[in-house]
Image (cartoon, rainbow, N blue to C red; front, side, top):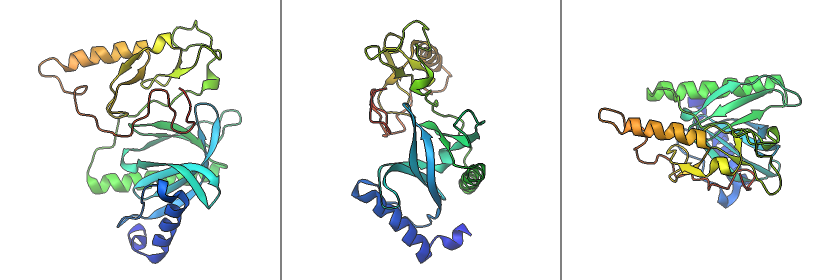
Amino acid sequence: MVDRLANSEANMRRINLVENCFGTAGQPLAIPGRVLIGEGVLTKLCRKKPKARQFFLFNDILVYGNIVIQKKKYNKQHIIPLENVTIDSMQDEGELRNGWLIKTPTKSFAVYAATATEKSEWMSHINKCVYDLISKSGKTPNSEHAAVWIPDSEATICMRCQKVKFTPVSRRHHCRKCGFVICGPCSEKKFLLPSQSSKPVRVCDFCYDVLSVGELTASQPGSSDLFCQSPKSTNNLSDDDDDDDDSSD
């Protein structure tokens, strides 16, 4: 069915409408063979609070953005290649229900649908697209994923030292390796995580020590060059920026 729709006028019109909603700030989405599978509003768990985001599922990418005017205007476009995606269902907890994790080497996060049926349909379609892509390319499914950031509200004190209490002066930060909410003194070091950034990023002291040991091991004769390879991504988040909230981490 996807192959049949790939070059249809209806599919091209739908993709052009999505492009127009993102305006000139968004990247072009219409390429040969790309099909818009579905779209809808999902609640994305951001670092400060859950927020509604517009998602578009294509046969090869997942696109989402902030809702400015529903069905008319979106901004802060994010494009995720589906061949790098793994999804895991989440159990219902409190008011957050019908959720699942979207995990990639660059960024991982939780989203929630309005109903269990909607969740099932989203997960089924995403899994089908990922399976078809990997089957055609012959690639091995990705096993490396960025940590899911723990929301600010889940931590009143540093999750590493268990001593520093967060206040307007003592700010929260996030370790890019484990996703823990940590204090400044516990996150003064940076480490190069090529799948997330071309520059060293903030990590907690614990993860820094673990990564440093791995780097030393990898540098020994006969070891792989896991920590010495060239950066894979140009999607850089500065150390104190969150891509959705545009605020400190």
